[in-house]
Image 1 (spheres, helix red, strand yellow):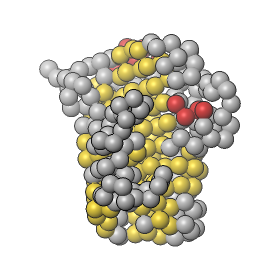
Image 2 (cartoon, rainbow, N blue to C red):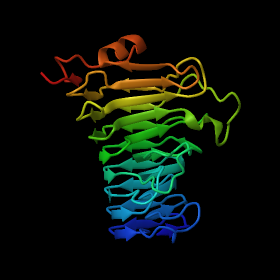
Image 3 (cartoon, helix red, strand yellow):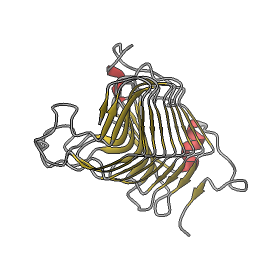
Length: 281
């Protein structure tokens, strides 16, 4: 379904096995279960299962809520369950996204994305502002639960009260797309963003999974990606579950929650009031 319209509702639909034949999809932005690009769109209570590429891609000030997206990214790579782009005033809440893998069968081995890349909820690389992502459940994704990719105009975004469970990376942050979209100016370095991360549960269930990953691409100094408060970090098998990589200096650092809080002065709730970090006895 591709809606080129404004103020339209797409509610209570079931889409199954969409674009599952390799080579028969639309060029460039094909193989997508649902897409809309207008203002005032409402996308509610739909169930999308087995999509060749992205489950849903939405833009502008869409309201996207109470949808279930399962097994998207079946034959293509570098996408997500719900992908947002050119957003301003968008709300994505109370959705379930699960079981995304990403298919690299047709990727050339020297291609920079020749490994699975799929994110439950995926901030696109052009411009996303004033967007609320709240109370979503994302599980069993081969890369990240939520990937917040920033551009130089990213502002006013909020990631709140989501449950991210059993993904390779529960919460992924980057400034990779600073080179792109409006306001992109060399050398593409933005020292800080005002994104809010609050009330999220980040639950890693194996030693190889991360609660959070941050990719700092364009400057020698680390980027401040926003404010973090009242998030809960669970790492039963590996307490060093926060990973930071500075692509400019090639420095990589892995943190326990306490060390990351100490060095970055992050707000947290004392364990007596709320369980913020839990390790296996």
